[in-house]
Amino acid sequence: MVSRRQTVLGLAALAAAPLGCTRRSHSANVVRFWAVGREGEYAVDLLQDFLRERPDIQVDVQKLPWTAAHEKLLTAYAGETLPDLCSLGNTWIPEFTALSALTPLDQLASASRDIALADYFPGILDSNRVEGPLFGIPWYVDTNVLYYRRDLLQRAGFAAPPTTWDEWLQMLGAIKELVGADRYSILLPLNEFWPLVTLALQQPADLLRDNGRYGNFRSPEFRRTLDFYVSIFRRGWAPKMTNTQVSNVWDEFGRGMFSFYISGPWNIAEFKKRMPADLRDAWMTAPMPGPNGPGVSSAGGASLVIFSASQAKPATWALMEYLSRSPVQQRFYELTGNMPPRRSTWQSSTLASSPYAKAFHAQLDRVRSPPKVPEWERIAQEMRLAAERAIQGVATVDEACVALDRKTDEILEKRRWMMDQDRHT
Image 1 (cartoon, rainbow, N blue to C red):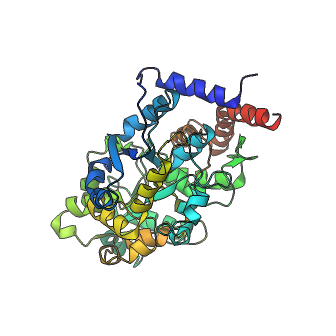
Image 2 (image 1 turned 180 degrees about the vertical axis):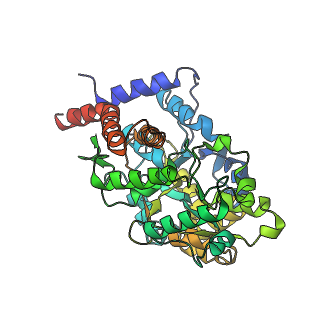
Image 3 (image 1 turned 60 degrees about the vertical axis):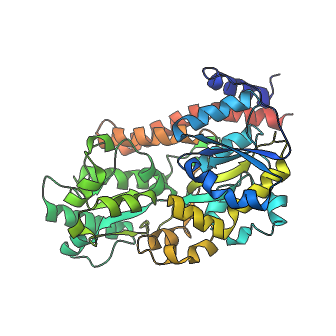
């Protein structure tokens, strides 16, 4: 009988085959840190105080682009050359937990003087737990809120952004009447799944059922979400376009092609930089509206993890503690614009004084993790495709939900098999 670990290892080896890898020596006082994304560009600067504080520890920083990181990590897993420390996207944590590649951190965190788990936004911290144990410490957070043209909203007769779906629909209709046939109320790019996922997470029903074994997209709650989402396109309030068909999101937002946009914190800097000077005060951010009141949003971002094979765990944990301190997180925010996961860091003057950050601060108290299964990103893409079929009129909402459940069950077939094997061993 092939074990679960052998099966997953085989899949990892297949994914890693094109890249190849070489084994590296290990040392208890050398921390190999893979920093994913542009954060790696600032990691060396961020670590200078740590190296002065702990001259007995060396840190080897390797920068990885997001586009190559997943395959690189699987390559390293298959070749047993994973680093000691890595910044891992929250949605990848279940996958590497299934590989038994991550070190549980509850005992270390509870004994730490630098990491106070009660100080973290609960929904963000929960995204690092898989079936109970904690496998990551949030490094920076990412969630979606509304970016909106408050000048156009006021011209349409509304003094404040929406807090419920019904209010939002009223505003979308009024803005469309205001801007005319060649402009829209909202941009919901057809090639992005996060807007739909964010709306679906606002419903009480889980997106998967039976402990992540099957899809739950035929539930009345998801059907309501998909119908709400598709109706925005059906009424002509959103263009049937991908973001690659929009010449420039920031310029078009300034031109008034659309008045609402769902996005994350990185766009604060972009809109501040790219909006015309005369529209500098014409836009704002707001928490997500929900079906019946202020809504939840997705719990995203990246977390610091220690790989199980690390032979430098004490030194690696010391570095994780340092990177988790509130003053260091504040410095990290100043360098990158990435928002911190600890409440105490939000008391800093730069964040507290930003009018655009206030919506994110409020939203972080209402976030929810997507399903914690390794197959989640594939399922999310199927959600996007199902929605597009309904938007284009190829399928009804009911037909799209049924087909999405069927496809999800196919994707989760291997998961069900492995869970059954675990139950009988």
